[in-house]
Amino acid sequence: MDTGSQISGEKDEARRKEFTEKVAFHIRKLRKERKVSQEDLAFNSGLNPAYISHLERGVYSPTFFVIWKIARALDMTLDDFLKGFRV
Image (cartoon, rainbow, N blue to C red; front, side, top):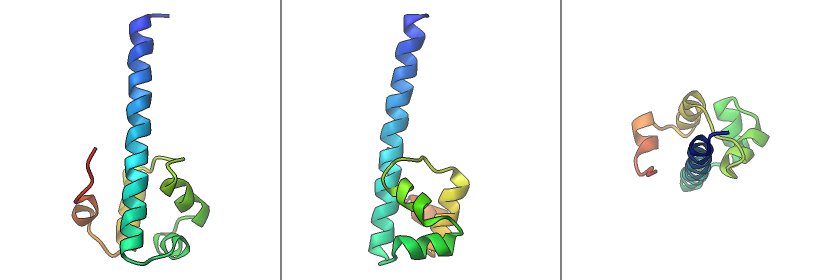
């Protein structure tokens, strides 16, 4: 195996993990600021409560569509949802 490709793949995986953790923190922060429970967020977004929990713990990385659903459930535009999010 090409060592350069392996190192590049490891860097990508580390970046993906860092990104997923930052998304998790951002979702949890916004939900708590709005005093919304995970269960209510799940219900209002049409997502499973366990999935919301996994997102907030950084187990899963959401698609952009899921982010849009969460933003809507928090009564936010995507622009507002993404404000303050830094990678």
